[in-house]
Image (cartoon, rainbow, N blue to C red; front, side, top):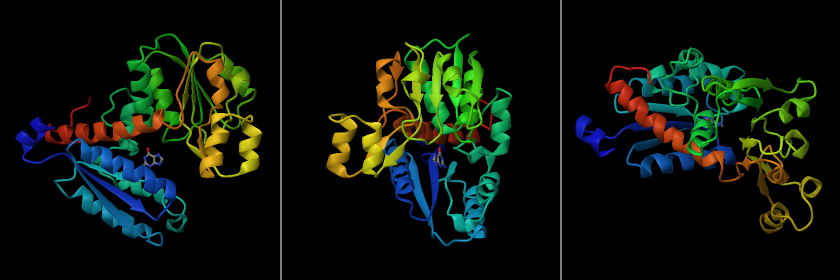
Length: 291
Ligand code: GUN
């Protein structure tokens, strides 16, 4: 960071746009801003009211596109329903691709497809970083990704493909999902369904990455999912809510490795926001070379 500041006379700058007051988005955005600022970047929050029009969001993004001290722009998803269907895509399409630290702009998605990415979606990037740092072999292995979202499932599958895994993508219409999942050496769950992946989905010894972060507030659901005396029930008893991933914690008894929720993929996503901010800043100063 010091080297960047010495060279360019200012730190890398990130502008985060938050529309509305979703409690989950408030937490995510606060953590992103805190981490990026703690590393020495400038991190600024731009708020829009829950009733703001799509045009207000587009005008703000255009202003940030034109601000030379802002290297990265992140518009927190989801946008308020009042902005209308398709608003999110229109906003992402308007972000300058060179400042697109989420990697959601179709130009950056296209570069990722062609294996010459500049900026890649933070959550899948964090998952790959985790696999590589843990020394988990990928070449020739079978990776199964459950979930086909633009934010996680699709870029995750591409990143794994580019590391020579054989990738299967599963989704809500997949027939006999547990059997396909059971053939995975690396299983990634990104569907937003609490505790959906159970032991019968997992080959013994497989590496399981849990991308889901679901807040349970319903006692009956907590009691259905977790046995008496379990840690999750204890947390629920204390707080009245409990965070659970898409993978049931019992999977830990079968898997070779399992990312925890909370404290697994979440912090890595935030670390990748920081990395992408610095990457965007350097690439912009460098004339936008591919990484
Ligand atoms: N909402 C949930 N995950 C993400 C993310 O990675 N980026 C943005 N902008 N919004 C999100």
